[in-house]
Amino acid sequence: MKTLIKNGTILSPEGEVKADLLIDGEKVAAIGTGFVGPFDKEIDASGKYVFPGGVDNHAHFEALNTDGKTTNAGYETTWCTLLGGTTTIVDFCTNEPGMDLCESIEYRINTRAKGRVSPDFALHSCCVDYRGEETLAEIKKLVDMGVPTMKLFLAYKGTSLYMDDATMLAFMNEAKKYGMTMMFHAENPDVLDMWRDGEAAQGHYEPKYHYMTRPPFGEAESVSKCIRFADAMQCPTCVVHVSCIEAGEEIRKARAEGKPVMGETCPHYLVLDPHLMDNPDWKQAVHWICSPPLREKPHRDYLWKALNEDWLSILGSDNSSIPQYQKEWGFDEKLGCVDFRKVPNGCPGAPDRLNVAWTYGVAKGRMTKEKFIEVCCSLPAKLNGLYPRKGALQVGSDADVVIWDPEFRGTVTLETNPNGLTYQPYEGCEQIGRAETVLLRGKVVVDDAKYVGQPGDGQFIPGKPFGLAYDLLKR
Ligand SMILES: [Zn+2]
Image 1 (cartoon, protein in one colour):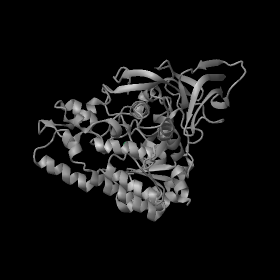
Image 2 (cartoon, rainbow, N blue to C red):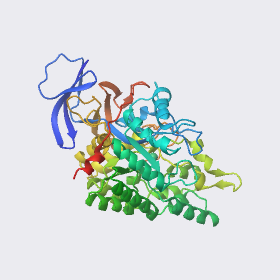
Image 3 (cartoon, rainbow, N blue to C red):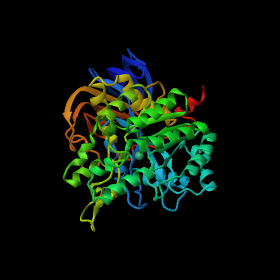
Image 4 (cartoon, helix red, strand yellow):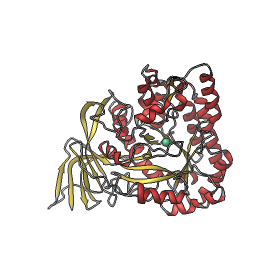
């Protein structure tokens, strides 16, 4: 099957070029002009941009919640990410109850995900059941299985997610031997607990106390520890979902000093205002409870700058598709009101990641098109060892292609921008530009901005070790 995408402008981190793209089967066969048919399919991309499908470094579909039982919205909702132009998600795989890390990965690929995932997917391992040497011995096996990344939670003390300093160091020491990149959710748990319980003791339970009790210094302190440990252990590390100036500055300085550290931020930290949580209707206000929390405008302005200057290199969604009924677990029967401490943390966002970056970045002159491709497509693919199969349109790359209409103007609603849930955190936001046509390995899965693919189109894509963060060791 040969497909020609003609008359478009192809975007890459190096710039833009007017050229045609020839696809043969699942791969990019050639880029140029004057291709001679016959072709099985021709797509006219006049007036449109053509770029590699988005790679989302940070997705939680079907995640187990902190109680170890219930799950977020499932893989059947992942088609929404294709509609938004993301063709590869890197999903987090925590320990399934009673399974070690490798068994959990196998279970996820062969059972949970089988026949249900729409985009292609890679996996990060995420340890929530640390068993010392037994767990550390799994690192090499994980890398061999195509899972060269591991996330640990430094927050949520008192739950199985929390990992202490000794565990962090043990992981780093082992991970670097096999080219595994470590990732951290960095928030100081003692700061959080002290601030949260202090407010609750004064009868402050409303959702807005979520953002008021997660001060930037608590995040920055934890990021600082990640950097110091990564440098001392010479273990390449990525701090995920950086939300504030103080934490970003830690990473900026570390990178200037050549330390092996990268940082990610997320669309919601770029554009959404924490005062959305002041909504007196608590069932609405809880939608924006995520960790770290949304921050005030100076932080949002800083994060745009940080992405542009490459202190932060990756725009990941941290998609947590928590259904409304789970958000309402925040209601405390005894208190007779919502308790912000009990609301599951997380925001959906994988389907809207590219829209947000284009609308508020490229279209508003806050980000170049080259940087957009870098933070949304190529750098996440490189970090996860998926490049250039993913995150690039080169001869031999998978033909994951977005044809983007920059003239589109709209307003985000749940109907126009579905996310698999019954609420949309970007409801009412402006949208400029959208994915009009999307191909996944040569197959059209979005046509005229409508999903036309099938669940199960997505395949597991193994990542290679020694990803982008390892380049920082060569100096
Ligand atoms: Zn996350």
